[in-house]
Amino acid sequence: MADQPLVGIIMGSKSDMPTMEACTAQLDELGVPYELVTASAHRNPEKVHEWAGTAAERGLKVIIAAAGKAAHLGGVVAAFTPLPIIGVPMKTSDLGGMDSLLSMVQMPSGVPVACVAINGAKNAAIYATQVLGATMPEYREKVVELKRQMAEA
Image (cartoon, rainbow, N blue to C red; front, side, top):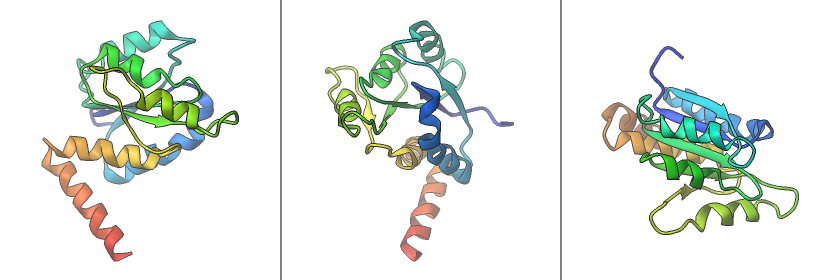
């Protein structure tokens, strides 16, 4: 990407990529620059710590964290950065994604993680753009246009 990434996307596993393609496609459509990394809170905690701990310094403004099963990735990332986190719970074969969803929405007080629907990657991208739009009018206009197009469809 030529532009400075504003959104960081972190996935717990490469197997999350097919679902998260809806996120990257939506960010591309909205013209939002992003970076993408795969790192598990359980298998690569040092990588997650380094990536999340330097996210704000690198210019990221919001982070999307996708994980399944014991989906602690969003909470771990939130522990290491002051940036807003949007969790995407992944559908699982064991419990259909309810395990992922509950792991994300039941964060302790002081460590918030916003959460979209199970496999809600597209909404995560739109929400991240709305967060950017709170202080960056060009992204607010992108969301306004998206909503106009949806109303006309």
